[in-house]
Amino acid sequence: MYPIERVEALNPEVTRMVVRAPEIAKKIKPGQFIMLRIDEHGERIPLTMNDCDAQAGTVTIVFQAVGATTMRLANMKAGDALLDFVGPLGNPTELAGARRACVIGGGLGTAIAYPQAKWLYEQGCEVDVITGFRNADLILFEDEINASSTRQIVMTDDGSNGNKGLVTQALQQRIDEGANYDLVLAVGPVIMMKFVAATTKPYGIKTLVSMNPLMIDGTGMCGGCRVKVGDEYLHACVDGPDFDGHLVDFDDAMRRGVMYRSFESAARDAAAG
Ligand code: NAD
Ligand code: FES
Image (cartoon, rainbow, N blue to C red):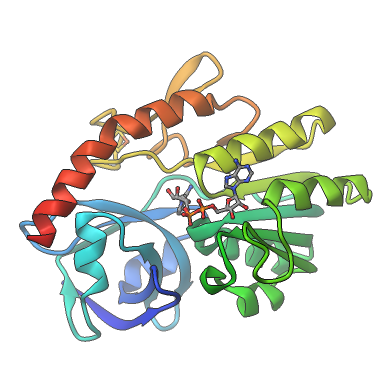
């Protein structure tokens, strides 16, 4: 069993959970994920690492209570335990060598963008972080990112933080100002990653996107997490989750995402009783 050490609501939709898992905490790197199962009746869900502390033996995950399992997870307390917590899975994000990076987090994706920005910043890379949220109440990790970036730009769709616009508008502005990035990394809604990749493509800036399709086994066996990259279908769980944003077929990824939505909402209704 994997004891839960801390649970904290970060905003009305998002929860941070610190789980004791010493073996994973020693090995996990930014971009990698774990698969957890609450109990023997639960489904396995993938969650990408938000933070880890090898000395304390803990791994931090951040999730939005949108599905049946994440709704149950959000109701768990410190002192409860998870049946399975398996990882690290997937490949670490290829961050080495970047000198001027822009890390982009859309909504909950910011929870995963943060450790990547932190790692780059600690290696001496100049790091701009651009995050986007629907409104100011949903802003995540502002203090943590301030401490781990050269520059932070927080956008809101409704302008309630005084900075109205999408992440892509801020990215275009920084490129126009001569930011001269050698790496752009985007984590968030598929539509956001699609338009981030479209923004950087004319400039030939290397752009990695973190794909988050439905995953069942997390080991390359079920085929649920296939992503069309160039001419081939790759598995996000073993070949990714990061891919070259200029090669990913985002429209195909969105079509596949919609296919599974009705199953997820039926499970959520069942869990809500
Ligand atoms: P959201 O829908 O509120 O969008 C967040 C931000 O993305 C917006 O504020 C905006 O700046 C930007 N954005 C949205 N549409 C855009 C467009 N068309 N063009 C340019 N920018 C756009 O996000 P949310 O509701 O918090 O959802 C978070 C999403 O992140 C979910 O879809 C989730 O699946 C995904 N996610 C992905 C990962 C991953 O590993 N890839 C991890 C966690 C969450
Ligand atoms: Fe099953 Fe990737 S989750 S193949």
